[in-house]
Image (tube, rainbow, N blue to C red):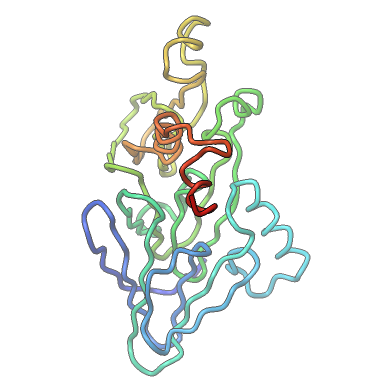
Length: 255
C-alpha cells in the first residue's frame, strides 16, 4: 500500500521526540495525545481508526476502531496535515522515558509486529491493526504478550521502547524474553508464549508465569524498562498515605 513520504529527525537521548517534516499536502498519523508541538499551517483532525483506507464505510471504520480498544489505545487517531505552501514540522513524544525506533517499512517487508502500546506515529497510508497470540490459553495469562499490534505499509513508522533499546538479529536462533521486554519484530520471526519453568519457578522465581520465545530469521527489538514494570515498582515503593489523616487531605482541609 502507498504511504506518504516524510522526512524526520529524532531529537534527544533518553527522553526523545521525533520531529517530522511534512511537504505541502502530506499527512502523518499519530496516537491521540502524542503531539508535542507543531508549526503554523499544520492542521489536525481526529478520525476513527487509522484512516489508512479513505474509501471504507462507517461500519468498517467502527469495526477497525473497536479492535483498537483491545490494545488499550484510543479508538481514534489524529491526522496532522500540512495545509500550507512550504514545508512544516510537527513533533511527537512518548509518554515515558525511552527511545524512539524509526522503521523504514519498505525495507522491513512492509510488515512489523509490536507490543500493544509501542506505536507512536506513521506516514498516512500505514495500517495499524490488532493481532493475537495463537495460544489463547497461554495468552490470557501471558499479559502483554497476548495482544499485539500489526503495522503495515511502505512508508516510515515510529515505535517507542522504554529504557534502553536492544536490537537483535536472529539467524535461526531462539531468544526467550520477558513478555513485557519485547518491543516488536519483523517478518520471518516465529512468536510464541511458553511457561517460564516448573511450578516453583513460576510462583516464586519473580520472572512471571510465562516467557516469550522468538525464533527464525529477522530482527527483534527489545526494551530494558517496560512501562508496566516501571509502574509496578512505583506502586510497590510508594508510601501508604490513604485515609482521612493523609497529608494531602489535611492540606485540602486547610490544617
